[in-house]
Length: 582
Image (cartoon, rainbow, N blue to C red; front, side):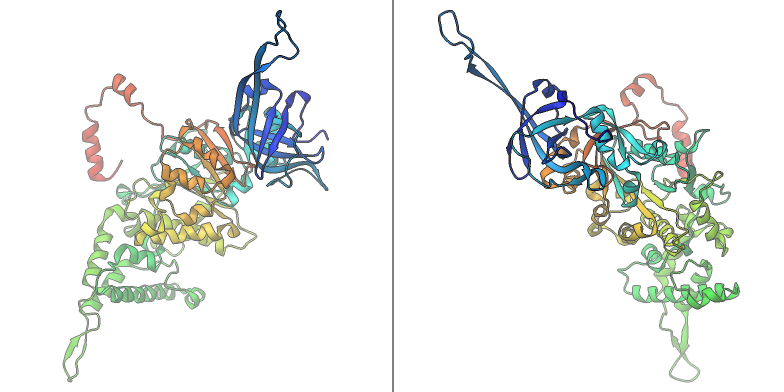
């Protein structure tokens, strides 16, 4: 069969099977020259029951032993038999799957798990070079050349190009994990670069540090730049500013920002807030003559309402009096003086310019049709509007970051959920520095739990509605277990922390756990790729993206040796800090 993925010549033969147990094979190497090319993690193929079947294994150990033996074919001048060296090369491999050149009506099939155990004396081959590339890229062999998710090359053979299956990588959620400086930003930029080559890529990057802005500048830009408006943008926002007004928050999200649950009057405060939100939204719909929406809306429906009207209603409740038992007298109302602290906290938030993008948005953000325009620009994919959107969150205060990211993710998911199924265009949300707003639930605060609910719902149900997550983090042990458990693909770069390494080891089959031992030793841009998008867990070297993100590590020693600090840099930074404008 000329199109078989694995085609071995006589010179490719390693040796024969010497011993077999339930999951491992011991191979006696007869072609000793191959031992110089064998490394832990390499693939070997063992002849199966037929010529069209091979059992695939991963090298776990390679050993060479030298001992003395009698040279029976030779004799010394004195008639004695001389001693010589005997070399024995052995390879220990873990069985991981079965490849068939022909399988019924199908060809070039691979399945995890060995259908049978190899027999002693079966021929064994080293899978490298062209065989390695063709075999590992079986999942992508039908994808056009320009549409493949090409990531780099395999470390086992630098001539073999590593290609992941793009559909499987994005449709079932994925994660890029690695310590700081290991190459996570490069990996994200590379994937965005590959996606930008497609006709209608649709990805939204939640950029926590503004490092992907370089992908939006210059003639070769591949993405559209947005940023959450900062304090300096409230008066004259430009086209790239993004506002998320308070009325987009649902009841629980708003209360997580304002309500102090330890307050004895917290239940009363939450009840009055909920009632006023409902009545104010009802009035807006009534005045706008939105009869159909008015009949079915809920307190969580994203409908604009005046925040000053809310505060006025709460103040009226707080000082309200009702008729007393005796005619002509009055007494304190049921909410009298119970909402004071709640009103104060709300007024403090409203006046805080750090969260002006939420509580002090421009007047246009209170128009009924504004939400449609805002989300329309985020979902738009056209010649004029690039399908990859970078949203800069670097000026968002850390205490409200979880709420803000959660609100945006919930809106994006909700639009896909309510959209006609034939009109849905797949969307991937890239969660940069996910540990900042997607923590382990047990250690999450009230605001963080609201964000977790939105992202965990996407992780559990998003695939059905064309929404997936790509989680990026340097501390996987601090990221929600629920979200990571729903990820079916992982690109794991260098990890030095033992707790982070243990998270990855739990993702691997027990028989292959040893592969993760190399995680602390990986070089910049090297990683383990595992999951549905690749046939087998494998070590790859990522290509360098054409447009590098602004995340390169500063060369401390070199800068100290060659640069002179600018005298006015500190004074300018102090003024920027005071004005909250870069």
